[in-house]
Image (cartoon, rainbow, N blue to C red; front, side):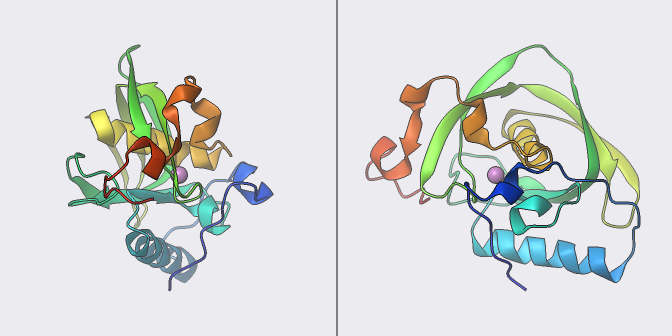
Length: 175
Ligand code: NI
């Protein structure tokens, strides 16, 4: 079922989410199925549970090709529950971000360039992955949602924050 995505200004997006304590429940399975359906319907690169009003530490991301980020390399469909992020470098990288909760806008955000993320998959199996580039960016963006942080709060250079169609006229990257 496609769920409604909360938009910036809704105080629920600023709440800190709590950990998942039970796996292989009907509730969690349905939540994940709905999150994938909602993300794909909105052509998102990722989605965090609090964006649909569920305050659990659950994020999903991944795509083959994404209209919103046409230059981005594919990321495998990923479920990440109760995540921890460990930077593997001090290096920060600037990159454009958008958010389904902040439709129509884009901004440049500095993020750690390389990191290891660890957590649990949909069945409760622990795993970790070392990633960089856009993959590392997406994980940081989605996990920020679990702590009530939206990417505009991380924008440093407000000359690189604005409406997508003004920033990228004639570009088809959509919202
Ligand atoms: Ni977002």
